[in-house]
Length: 168
Image (tube, rainbow, N blue to C red):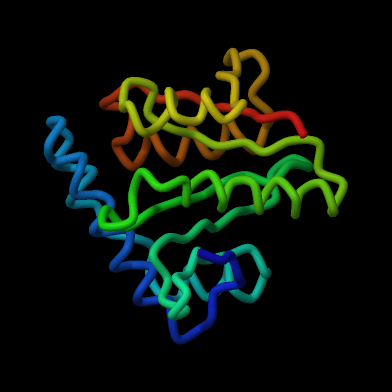
């Protein structure tokens, strides 16, 4: 497995990975999350052009996971990380997160941030094992507050969510 920048011709593959990864939400009573469409190709193009999109690819160079990020309040913010279920539980998500941490460090960003479901085992509990800590609401930066506002407008607050931060 190796991490590299995503190519433009792989953007629909990222959508397929996210759809497949989302299916596990159906099994825990969150079918709305499973049915939620991934970002559009035009939205993914923006991450590609910003050089904020990476894939984990097999030895045959086939993407099996991806991560996209934004710059938010001086940190790198994980917008989405998805691993195809056929490749899950092999440390691929951790590889992508560690790659982003290295990118953040090289850019002088002090932390990684993300928003996630607190009660989904492969969300907040997983990120906590990787060094992320839940931020108290009083520690939300303006950018994180805006992200949470958009998530709430999209209906994601039907389930408990939190902002998390990993110091670098």
